[in-house]
Length: 222
Ligand code: AP5
Image (cartoon, rainbow, N blue to C red):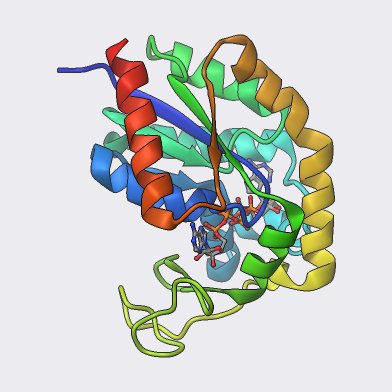
């Protein structure tokens, strides 16, 4: 049996991390884990985590590292992560990269690939304006580029699609600014280890997904 692929997806808001993560994970037979989606589900359910995270998420700020460490540990402890995973949206700070290293080291593993999805500001603003998400199952659509089969309805579970609270223009600008401030040290961690693979997030969906799958498989074989 091959070693688990423990993959992180990095990149600005709206670059396509979640869209690609779900599809790449399906092909590799591992779970795609979005920390943003875990937080949004907790906010909707009104759990203690949701109450703690709500103001940060809706304001476009990062949830504190110590809160995210618990979120990470809980999710990685689930059985479906034993054969690897894709983390979409984690780590977002150098401290979180350290948390992930420690969590994986405890099971004799480490991050195997870091995929940096690159996309310019004009593209991400356009994409986020057209994005609609399913509040029930987390599926992501786009009015312009990836519309649902029935207008306003999730293809996967039939729930009514919504605009994310943090996709309002002011909040998007804050999220982009936070990303610009925080991303360089995280990317540097994986670049130094030779694990960082850049992909062009503006290319057609299937091309990006196939490119990432190839990159992961080639790197795993070498
Ligand atoms: P999170 O949910 O992680 O949001 P994000 O990083 O801002 O990223 P997005 O989900 O906005 O974009 P994406 O890159 O996944 O793009 P998508 O695939 O949807 O985090 C939200 C918040 O939670 C944070 O602000 C923070 O408060 C908190 N949080 C989460 N993790 C945290 C952490 N580790 N630490 C602290 N706080 C944390 O694509 C965008 C659109 O484009 C979609 O409509 C899609 O359909 C479309 N699209 C994508 N690719 C293509 C393509 N190739 N062709 C056509 N359309 C495409």
